[in-house]
Image 1 (cartoon, rainbow, N blue to C red):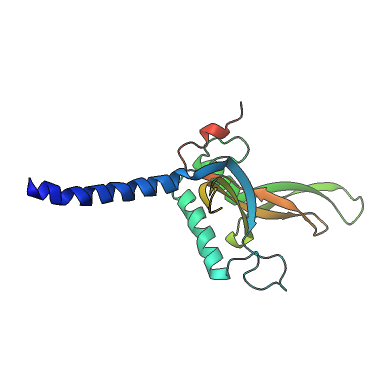
Image 2 (spheres, rainbow, N blue to C red):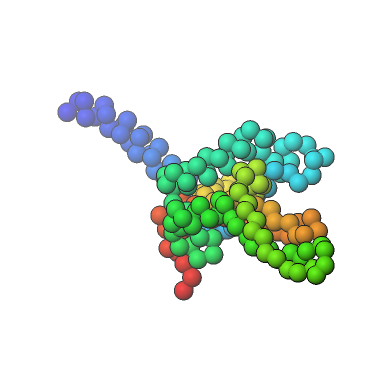
Length: 187
């Protein structure tokens, strides 16, 4: 009985600490369930400091290689960017190695047209941005944000025939949250 009275203050103190921790977590309110944005991981401007819109070369390649290898090895599932359908190994291979047919005109008369097949293999150095899908929460008193990554999508730059940047092409989604891609499926 004496031991119980000695442990009672310790138990009360422990309960107060746990309640305080839970109260701190309760102060975080949901800012947004989903937010999607692109993060440059390779600066398009060579005059910027190395850390501006950039992850240093070896670290960037390691990050991208890890994502791509995990997908190719089947360690994580990859989903179509537009439909959120699970991609098959064949579909993934076609993303990694694309074939396009273009029509050209012969330089010499009679200037007939002919088709040529261009095969482009994806190089991890071509992945210069990552698109993130996240959930954000904020402690209203301290304004401290917490972000939970629900998914990531590698992006590659696409250029026109004139060499001008036309935009970024998404490759696929990798989701880390069991809610996805179910919540994102088009209805």
